[in-house]
Image (cartoon, rainbow, N blue to C red; front, side):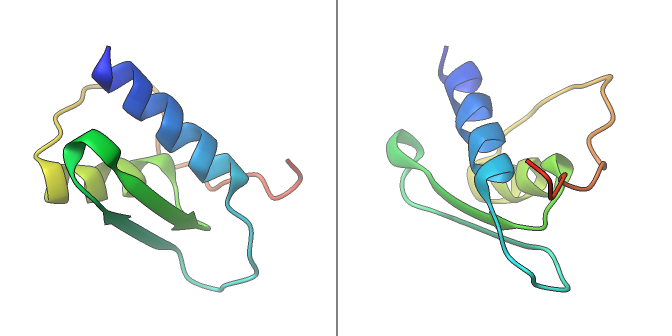
Length: 73
């Protein structure tokens, strides 16, 4: 349940992130119970990689995770 909640939060944050920065940026902070994620022009893979580095998150996916965010959302 926690993983699904975390992935939903990540996806929402990723798609809600806006900005005109030329480079992607992912900032992850807080304890595992209250993770704070800021993502700008980042792919879902970059967000998951940041979570893996900070919280030892493990995931498997057959989906393409390197697609850049759609700026028209």
